[in-house]
View 1: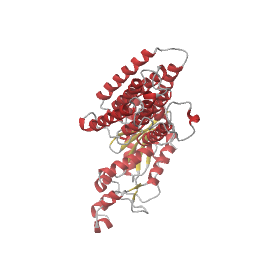
View 2: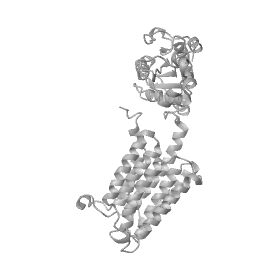
View 3: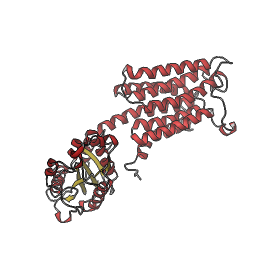
View 4: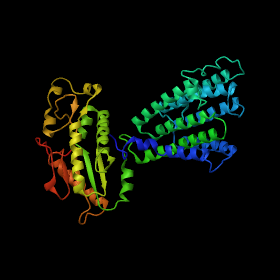
Length: 443
């Protein structure tokens, strides 16, 4: 199971959950009574700021969500004449909007980010226009066709007396929320997490009628979360590796500035990675990088993994000596070796045909190449890593010196046959699996 340190639970909760909790207490609590006019101004002001931020950082999904929330709030406010809807066109608008907004948020979350080009925004704006016309038609003075479309009950109405949202809309909200959480679990993208919390805030606001001081304040909090998600997204782009999803070189360089002894640093390199790319293509190479990064991210011993370039990673163990980190790295090396990488159908089709596929070429034999290490299943590639480990010692006190020492240890691991862990200055403690040594050629 993924730990809180690396796992998506923390990313799902922060920072949106604390913002929503603080906003709810501020709006509903007895400590500070913010006037309704102030909350209404704040709603539009923070929405405008969020849209400008989304435009500046090319996050069109957030801009679409902000526009969606503003239109939803304005529609109910207009047809309810500024009062909490209890019947008539205002209630019809609330019921229709509370059904459409979750589905639209889900559509935005699963859409591909393509910036603000008209080709990508055109269909979304057209959909909003069609939905706005639909809401306007069913919200005409009664009796209007479709006015009762969302008013039906699936279960006993008394069970849902706590909310003004109709049961069909509650079902749409529940399904959409589940799909948004699943989406975030797959992508771990801050915008996807915020969409889920935004839907929660929207549901609470519309349960109170969407109009009024409390509902307006909660919608403003939802817009604030969306605006903050743009900044979170920008931070992720700057500090996290786009391919693997783990922290990148910039994050590693910054954390080095804060290091205090004791600590140890491991340099991890995928064995024969160039051969994976040459034999099966860069797409398979990318999949191998993702698989290894996921294993590195789950390293025990409070280690933190970074991708610093190509097939090379580093693992930092703050507060741990090399001796204390050694067993955790050895366990990690063995887990990667045991996991293997299963080729997809398209990858297998890319393999050479005929005699060339049945036996390794002379060139591959000369290199001792592990492009296709032997496994019991021909569709599974054996992926291994070599690791060099070092800690501050003697004149090696600066982080750059420790990294250089770890690089030297990695070189020894490669030269000794790969799929090994070597510790700087302690050759007697190095280990490798019991197997025939590969060529001394360094990949």
